[in-house]
Length: 280
Image (cartoon, helix red, strand yellow):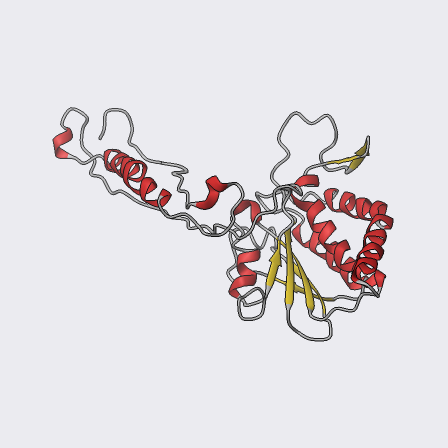
């Protein structure tokens, strides 16, 4: 069958599954996977895994290698679905997270009801990123429904804790080799950037905790002490005036969108310190 006909059949199958997809995403929205602290993760992972299993995918539930805080009270559970083709490679991995940030204030609808109004699905996580996760799952399923034989393997992972760094989620899958350059050829992450903002690559992240040790003295005799805040202020200024300009000189050759993200960025997120009034 010509390639164009196959694509047309696939797109028709996707369109036919539209309402089913919306219902599935609404079901995920109704599970309040709020992070922090990491609520209802296991329930959401089981709902996703059950659907993938119903579609004939091999399903695996994975807990993180290094248990983060509150894991006993709020279990971290990731889920992977796998559909093998004629060969193990190439392997395409689709990844999405199902944790959401707290809903905050100002909602006119219940953020965890998953309501459709005027052709739009409303709820916490509808954009970031349960819709993308649902779309990835249905993309794999629509390939099966269309009868398309895969040459390689497709995997779909639904992971936790992206909103807090992802160490118990996708980083854990990388640490255990489930996602690695040794076995994974391509990765697509359907974050809500829109069709006109498809991004290539990922900047990655480093987290640094820096401690400045001071020496307490009375505020009237600062020469007897040492201000850790002064030392940290000097470091922050050096980051701004020396390190940032150097990072801006190193621009990626990857066609990054937007181009302003083609260089490494650095951010001082928080500073904590100080003594009671009258002390250095």
